[in-house]
Image 1 (spheres, rainbow, N blue to C red):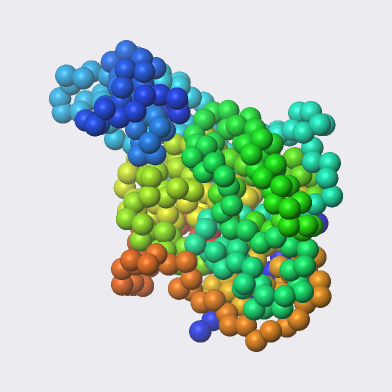
Image 2 (cartoon, rainbow, N blue to C red):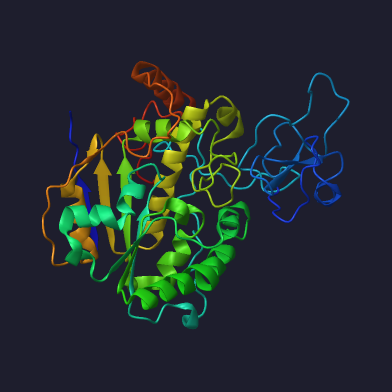
Length: 397
């Protein structure tokens, strides 16, 4: 079952248990011991997310059996960038899937196994009577607006929410959640998080409030949880793919003053993460500005979505796209999809494209952003495929 709404209103080794940084940019003894000879461990900016430098799972261009630390200048040293197609610290190349529909600098993992069936035991499948709605997005796409019960009341009146609990980022252990995509076994970690943390919490809240439907707008579910959510909840789940104009989304994120691989973006995927479906090659990544790296993040979430629905075509989904304004018409379509009844139409205002902009946002130069986007598309090799308003990810081969 799939509905599509498009309304446009113009107007490595990844080792989370490693030791921490000693303050001088070096990891502790525990982290160093995990790296091959002639290498050292280093944090990638996500705290406990560790990878081995020179060579490692990703930082391995030009290296074979080890790095010549005394080489000059930087000869045979892998200190810049990473390559997601490297399988281990010896830079043994794994299979790559370049797609002319995706661009030349992204690896196409959309058709790779996406956790198979995350559920291996029938007892792990949800057996209750509640319904769970999950919004799949980058964030900064109107999710805070959709995650406020007051906004739904403004649009449809109090009675519309009789059966619904509206939530945004209501997860109890955010530190554990954000580490899920860092590991090669993100599938099992995501499943464990859903079964042991997320499901019990949602059930407790719904039972306590005597509600029937959980509506969660938070984008933290993109951190390796999508396969588990689909497989655990089955036909009790609904997925809404929410897309906002890609330039607006990336610009809003860029106000954080740090890219998606830094601690400033708590719920972002990074090309280092094994959970990514379209990681970018290191040489191209290093050439990108912060804004351009968030353009990649927009494309990565689209790859996550395509991998999810491609591997699980039975899912009940709705796709909502908005450019200049997220309007009451969008809200009404979502309400119908999730089974919200007893709707009373109110005179609610639309949310415009300034929604979810960082409070310390810089003044915006649309001409400069358009030039950066052009440079991003060229760097990624998108010239032949072009980009839509919402992403640059074409169809799968």
